[in-house]
Length: 91
Image 1: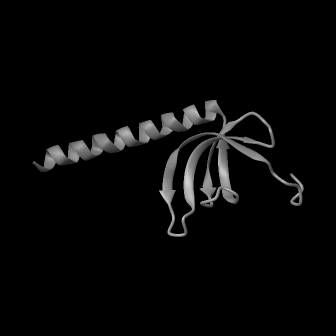
Image 2: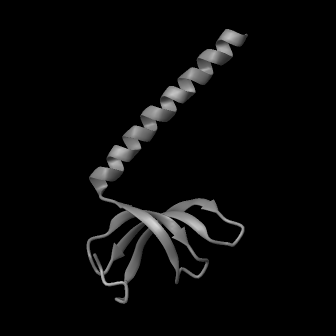
């Protein structure tokens, strides 16, 4: 575990988009981030408007991100199918 007094460096290599915005102005974002000069990973976390503070988040490798995408695609295609079936049945 990292020393809590050590400074963490980061570089947002690519910003993909904002997932949500809080009333405080903090944004939950998907970015490609290099932490402590390591290989960049996909990163989901909340950021302060000035990007100097961040909340706890989740980092994913490319393979993990592909797995997440597959899980979400399966989940939402199933949900869409169920909604379509219910709509057709109701008509």
